[in-house]
Length: 565
Image (cartoon, rainbow, N blue to C red; front, side, top):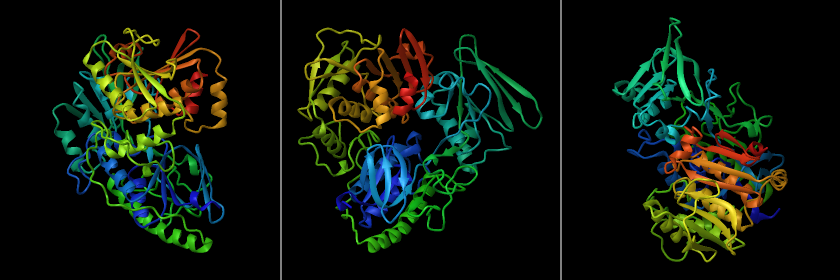
């Protein structure tokens, strides 16, 4: 056993529960690694405003969890962006199997949370991305000036219906029960909002249309009376579904005992039926799924895990190196929360030193992680700008100039003439080229800020090498693509589901010269949004052999390869 590679605990999931457990365990001087597949912060990052977390008057979900991440990092917790593939829980030393290799540890904590459920009404799958959506923060702006229906009667439905009034002409909430099922105070704002109508005892019957939603039929489940909404001629509308969450427990099926709904069952110490595998947060059986309950449960779980870890150390005589604790840094600006966090492709990026010099765009934490990425890049890259004299072009130039100023591995170059992209749309954009100036097939249209900062940096890392480790099967499928393939990914910088899709598309382009991956911030390229009738992000458009295919939703590397066929 290489003691330098051994962790006391590996936490799977970087949301509030996982980050809280990391804070407690690292502070107790246990070596802990947080592994997150998508972005640190979890589902709460899509919430525009959190107002019921004690001690925080109001903050966005991303701001709140970015502060938690910094606290955990300050106590010495380590972070890794990778996908967990499975577990080997035999013996005292367990192994967490990830896309970056096996990680030995004494215990693992499952904190993978839950994802939005679908209702199953007729037309829901057909119009997903063309009017049916599940994230108000990601997709609300697509329905500016349009009517919107919200399906659900819980806390999320009440809260997000109010948020949607920022964009929608009017919001109608369809609640199956006699009243909202959340606390009365949580529903009060929705009930008194003049732009919101609430229909109780009501369910969706069918959503229909052509290339977009045109008609919605709904029914009172007590009286049987049906209502019909028809969009104005040439117009469309939106349906946002908020009917609870499905637990992300696929990893532990057959390993740990689950309840009939798929939630993990635990004992009084939050250990599952599998020895050394604990669970906390929304992945567990709970009566209330809120940040406060996830944090409280994770704190208790971490405390119980300490006893287990101490006993494991005593049995084996193995003691992982304690984290180097240091004073907790001030929260600082949360601008770009979720972007710099976790950008490090390695397991211990949080220990990297900061980039020399200062930056007007990036804080010290972000600079430290950028430094780690840049130091591992094997080859230099050229970032070639294609601009059109607009304010957005100036913003993109300043952004790229700042990034290139942080490392000698990146060089900024202005295209001799403003030319549209090979993807057929979109100035301004930046394309990634090799050191000789040959395009590598990766480009971003707009400015890669917000949640797309991480994906942009990882795209550079994958293009320069060595890149993030990927499964052999995926590697073989990428090299097996023999046709010319063009991928467009339409994103919103506020969308937390887009980055993984972008990284997947760019990784394929980086590894196969016959593939290009162009990413578009739809806020600046509305014609693309209209062309593909995209009312949800991410929207993936694949052109192959003269034929275009459009699909919606988050995609990992294997799923993106499935789309390519």
